[in-house]
Length: 193
Image (cartoon, rainbow, N blue to C red; front, top):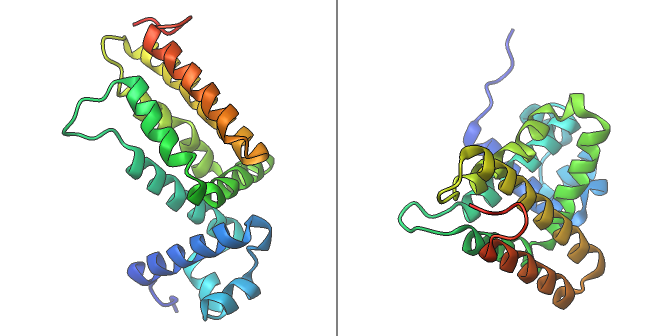
């Protein structure tokens, strides 16, 4: 006898609620019973919708990753150079309202590195998706140059975001971001078109 089919719309609604809970309460508090109580469902409902806790955490991270990529994607109807695109992404990720999302992102990232077999989908996208997005804004660069530059941009943005989340020193971190963007505008070392 097969189990009940999963209602995808209800799962998506529940996933958005789980994301909200995880952002507010942290990765460490993402356990079945308290989560189910907070969302007004049973732990069995969560297991039915998500499977294991690791699958639920990966679903949460996938949803966050999709939101970030959607909200920061280069607009199809306007031409955006790389420095402007980096600023656009930074404005989104450094927004204090988003701090909980990125604390959760880095917590899941750490967990994924500890147990890669449980987070293979997350790990296969966490670098590839943003590299693809930044490399798409490549101007006259070759694909190889754009990919190299995108890798550097991602490393800098994530490093600065970790710094900001750790220190809350917005002026210093934003100053460093602006220095990096100025290097992009000037075609700094390793960044020539």
